[in-house]
Length: 211
Image 1 (tube, rainbow, N blue to C red):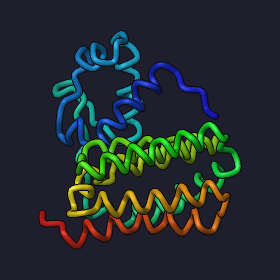
Image 2: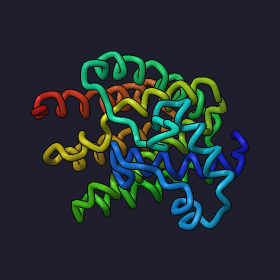
Image 3: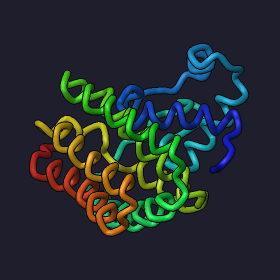
């Protein structure tokens, strides 16, 4: 399991915020406010924003500061294909390394996801989705693959996909299938469930997208 520095933990907090939509695309990241919310100094926030800029989650300039990046729909088809390759590699490696405690945490996250789905809390669903995948992929201990995966996430419209009608219900079912495969240590079932999860969200979004 990879050790996280203070700035990496702040980056994880901000990354989840961007993916969940809590930090909207095009919004400015105010370092002092973020530091106050997290309860840390400005320095790890500043370094975390540099990490996110390298991944593509954030654009920074001397005039405007750090801004949450927009996504480009024309590039997303390729991103989906790359996500499948990278995330399947991470998931397979993680399956052999996940501890019983980590699997119990995944079970707890799935319960949280189902509760959030039942109350139609799309913002909460996106955050839980991020934590579910991040927990699995961190366990793989493939830091470069995870880093490249995060650059793909930075360019992917998670916040818009979960606005598709009933998408969160289907996503919850897809997560349940992934969790079942992990618990039974069934590699083929995990890959099939993960591919379905990644591709289904994109196909549903494309069908409903109106620029």
